[in-house]
Image (spheres, rainbow, N blue to C red):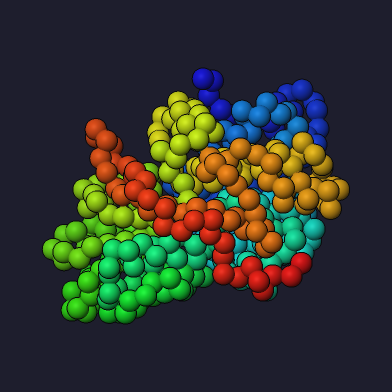
Length: 376
């Protein structure tokens, strides 16, 4: 397979002198501790654009450095100077809250391939905002549901102190039926968890739930494994996804985590995606890569029907979600967030590679808890 040019259609259009009909502004994290997440979203998105064969889509890609002020500056540049039609790419919920409301208020469409803060799902929803991944609470709700089936009665729970972290613990508690041995909000970007692990040890917990995406999860899991504490751990996919597992290693083996996607989901689109992504980039795709791929294919499906300039028609085409998702069946709820299965996965080792396998459905056809508060 030929190698993709990340400039994609932009390079082709420049060389031919043609003008792109649709310009997409992607702001994502490409440097620092969270770079792997943004790189996977970007690569999945660009793979779908390349496979579509369309030469009328230009993608402008910028690195937000995981800084809200940088994200805001980039969004202003894309809207005012680049004149983008559609925006996408943001990984982190605090950056999404800094960018999305302003972008949609200026008439831009925003397709989220990751961050799904509760504030944008309920009263703060907008008709031009579509989340292609999940609402933040969802995977944590599934973890709480799994904890019930595993008969956990006294969980110790922790997450970073930012919007997605707060949604995480809210989601877990919404479904979890047991008691809490402790509840902690850690610092965003924290790498030393000695104090938190000491509290877990002294808490009398029978299980641990945590949401610590990216490098935070790697640090916690390694330190937790070294601590000798022998309590089962459950969490969302964000700390057990493909790009992270190799860094965590043996410390993650056997841990159950929750996700709306996995590489072994049995549908033709997913099988082809896993094969072509690995051939193109030399690595297995992650949850984030699948979300970037689905986001681009949603966009492409809508462009088959209408242009972003015809806002009502384009919005209707996005809501129809007439594309083949890596997840199989895909549909939006009334607040433009997915209604979907969320699976329990177990960390396993295939040869020398740490990965996940699906062990069951944690929540079936699950919608978020905030849709009833959304009124476009």
